[in-house]
Length: 216
Length: 245
Image (cartoon, rainbow over all chains, first blue to last red; front, side):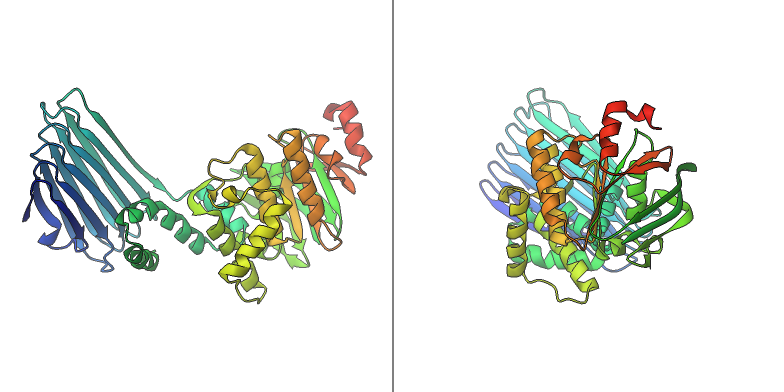
């Protein structure tokens, strides 16, 4: 477990790309007016990777902001679990989580998103979104949003969906001459697009985009 | 161009097409009309290769080749275009990327080099003008947030980009006001020439005032029950399907 304190007024950006070791397990505390941005990329080509990602984050000072953006392509027999535990302990905090996974072959994925707003943490704004696409009948994704909201003057929302590639879109693209593999690539690139653009670094985005295309 | 012989097709075990015969020559425009549930949209879906339908009997020759053996994308590259009754929204995939993939897939199939970005954008601009499609729409995701009329215009725009040999317009008039109908029909007419053919599938005579067919076929219960010239559509308008079927 790694520990991190984001001090008052500081901004920290954490990028996690190795999910199979303890560099993917974090306990982070945020002081007042701090900003934490975490990017998680599960793009491991190894078919047997077992990964356990934990982001245990607590806002202990007011007006802190927490952003968690993640995407993953789980392949082979990979078994990857991502847990986020975001706790708003004080008022006026913000958090936004957007995590998207595509799961293929016999891979298994899990997203457990715990969001806690303590009784005194009024004016908290917290959002959590998890979207998943299953690319084969043997792929599985377990998603479990868990919201515990004890303050009453807050704005919180969450959404979790798991589905397949849109068959009608696939046929539409095929009818225009696009091969199914290419159509799937375009659809999945579109699926991940909003997560990638949160990087705000076009060069890194391009590199990851190529890596994504290789895994699909 | 297209030769359909004794075509039977089912969906989920239910027979919808029950022996269709149709010959379409180059330069011709055919209208297929018929009551709801007659099999009009099924015919277009089967020709395009929609996986939900199973052909149980018959054959279809497209430019001398066995159409039914080809996967949908090869049918498209060979020059078969379906204007969808309900064009699909594809969030996140830009019209530009979508059309570039489609145009270049067809060019590769024809042994031509891919268009570079400059050539491609020039082609987009030229074809967009044909259906008065706004530049902003072309910059958006495929059909996302388009109005009914914009979606249909976007179909004809794609048709212009791909220059198909055979275009099937499935209920292109549905949901169009008179101005949109005129723009769409004018686009279709401009694209028509002696080497290509058009199938217009429609419930109403209205569209055929703008796209004038050489032949009109009445489809009922999975079979073509009457064939005539454009006057057949007018007769239908007078008597309704009950008088003919």
